[in-house]
Image (cartoon, rainbow, N blue to C red):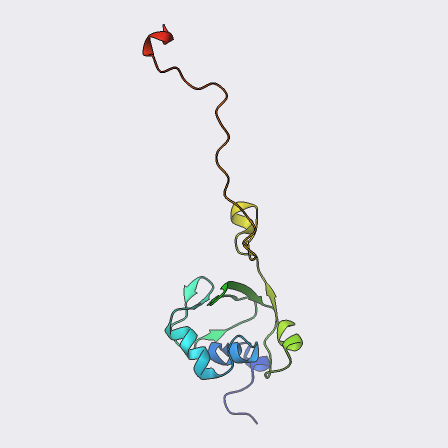
Length: 130
């Protein structure tokens, strides 16, 4: 029998261990560094300890060097597996699709455009209003 129980029977897993199993961190020490630098949130709240429990349905937000990843947990892994196995336990969530009707601009392709010009500019002379 395993010490501490397994994730299938308890329905939760330590978040530092989960990061390693899902290949977001190489080691538990690296996972702890993510936590210590406030680069990880669970359900919109900063994770403060590696021993916090993660459950199916939780949404993890990870700030990485190249941007932000938002994932929803679909299942809890029993061990670290291949990248394909790890990816089968979560799905990428487009965090801003509900807010702005668009999505994350992962490739930086959106441009900022100037406002369209006004059809009839207002007159400068206030006497023209009479």
